[in-house]
Length: 100
Figure 1 (cartoon, rainbow, N blue to C red):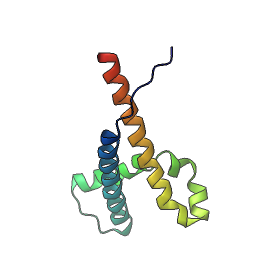
Figure 2: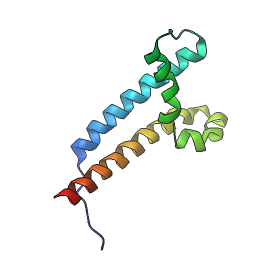
Figure 3: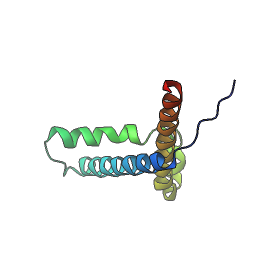
């Protein structure tokens, strides 16, 4: 019925660092695009566009709350990074358990 999958904290930490780096990179590209200082390169435009993916779900669904209280903007981004790291770590644990 209910199987327990061991939580792999080192994998979670690596995923957290990767997602945090990608979120910061896409955030800065998005800010540069808004200010008009983004270059004409495809990669920089792709990074700016990908910020909408990395700000989902907390910034997207609770965006009005973060607009009313700007202090919540970066904690919501942190929650997104934690959410994506946790979901991907659980998916890897599930796949490893099913394969072995």
